[in-house]
Amino acid sequence: MDALDRKILTELQLDGRLTVTELAARVKLSISPCHRRLRDLEREGAIRGYRAVVDPAAVGLNFEALVFVTLGWEDRDTVSSFEEAVAAVPHVIQAQRLFGEPDYLLRVATADLSAFQRLYDQRLATLPGVQRLTSTLVMKHVVDDRPLPE
Image (cartoon, rainbow, N blue to C red; front, side):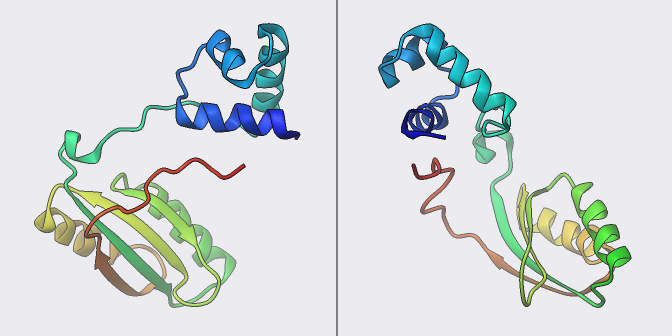
């Protein structure tokens, strides 16, 4: 990957709806080489897809929490069962496995505190292998959905 590929990625992260013609103009390439590079980036997996970035508040998800999960056991079956189950919870909008403690960080979006409390009690606390949940509430986003650095 060279500097031109990185410039293409930066431009697409800023505006994923650019046409190939617009993208080519921004990175100072003719259309054919730009299109070829774009397809290569897609085929190689550097570009995993295109999507709309939706404002959670616009769809009624006004409450966000970060939930730290510690598992009771970390054997392969427990980890696999937990990850499969957490992936099936629609209000978990991000989940990362961590080194050290806690074992996982979940980003959860709900309509309000009551909805979060129900989700916490009925779904999150009952996930396979969970020993402890700790949560903190998001006050505001300071850096959100920033493009990756070049």
